[in-house]
Length: 364
Image (cartoon, rainbow, N blue to C red):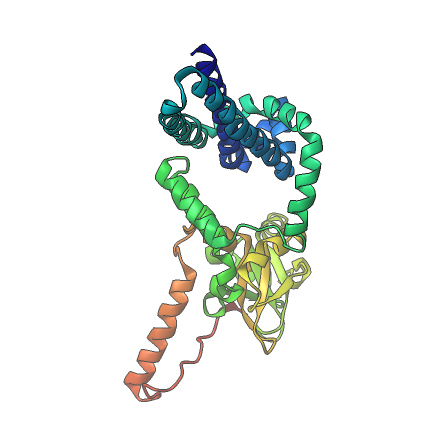
């Protein structure tokens, strides 16, 4: 009787440990493992090593589990037959199978999935020892599984899967609403172009190269902008930009006869068809805060700033104490529609005619 109990207990315990190891190994998030490694955890580094080649620990786990379920069950069955006779062997086998199902499969695997984070550090070293003990057997099984998986690229996480994970994180409370919005906005940037984010030409404020500081004396509209495009013959001939700091410095030195051209800095250009997810890296790589946007014909469509890109990511307009209008893109659409409506009302345009853009705000 004692031998039967010991044999059955060993089978159930070993199988339960294997199930727990397998569930934790598959369920613990990669981000949690990286967090442990970053915190200097030795168990975290060992777990990272095991997950880097998951075939090895899985082969060790399944090998031990198979030995326990087959060899151990056979030993327990033989002991039961000797203790109770062949008449009770069938009942013993049914009871042992039910016990293995509940105590060695369902309960350990459920526990491993639910508590994968705290258990991950506890299983790292025992699992590493198990891999070492079964190393000869692992070599053979790894060769077979590698041949099966040869030529198959490792799966990557798609944008849609990341969005689903974000929603689950929001639902589970691990992410705040604004954090989830930022993640989804970043992933959706590839669906937009610079044209969708830019400040349109019709509401773009610009200065001519010939503008003298005297013309800007007391002009709060000009000083409201940090960087102002500077053009030559027309707005399509943008030659650079002037910084508000340079204007204020010149005014402080009473250089009222200086032209804006003397303070003009070089400006970078970008096509309006460039994907929005490439915009922020371009701005940062070129150490720019602003690009002048060109259309397919080389004409100026508007301008795009670092602020525009960040607004799209956070999903809100960045408005400071000097901004009288929060959304210049909406203002451009309103002005465009107003121009069309006035033209139709006066008979200069038919309702079916395309609308032409209004001229930008400029200073001579």
